[in-house]
Image (cartoon, rainbow, N blue to C red; front, side, top):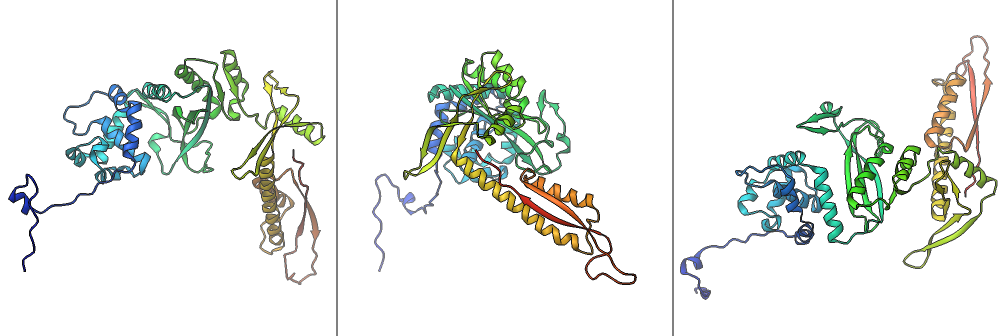
Length: 417
């Protein structure tokens, strides 16, 4: 029996009716949402205005390729060689591409787009985008928070060990420095970011050479923020690297306001800790923080009266109950690690093959262990010498004839405030 024929659709020809159809599947993901915010930021227009002149023969414009890369970073974070395949799985119209341009998008085209971005006036471009975001989303600039991190690199990068000029622009040095990932064996770059207190919106960022220090970056960062905000009375918040005499004086003399953490190396810190141990400090509770289920999460207290630094800036001491608990747990963990290491060292001293054959060697090993565990002020180690004698011709069954050492350790739990 013949199968019934499908009725002809309106406007459908007989040839089209008999033609086989193919189903194409394309992803949408979060692209419509991203397009909404990118449109409000006018990012495409800013890129076109600040990028170098475009070659008319370019199939995929530089601004379009950079925006595709940006969408990929926000959604998927594919490697550079996989961006073309990633884009082919999505609706090209939502990426700002046509079907013909989609086939021309590959890692070489994106790499060339990044080269052109290197030649652009990045500081001016970033400043205009940040200013647009502040106006469009009504972001408050009363508080600006600054911090830095390190971008760690694996590999030699011998050609980038020193700063040099490339195509009229400074190329930073990928080199060793204070690595915040605790990888001093790897080279790095320093990444500096400033966000608003209102929603943590990024408003300023830049990259420095890997051997740059945080304390030297704050003055330049603050000047750029003054250009962005058009004011100097915003509160600039940063970590303890801001609290140097030079940095604080620079901001104060120019009408700036700042909030920082007092470094442990300051004399005011040692004096206050001594006062805490003498129980000369009084605390006033100022805020209780509760969780979603009504449980007490943290309790903040303030030391009164407020003091001053050596330079005359206001100095406020506060105590966090939760931080005190976390600090106590961390101290206990380090103490347990150090005591375990000392227990493991004792049998090594009694071994016939020991390499600790002098009191100085033992003391050096103990000092290194306590220093690595950061417990030198809490554990006291006493090295006791024991002399082992043997008769002529007799072989000691446990250790060679030498001066031996014995360890005994005690620790005192530190006072907490």
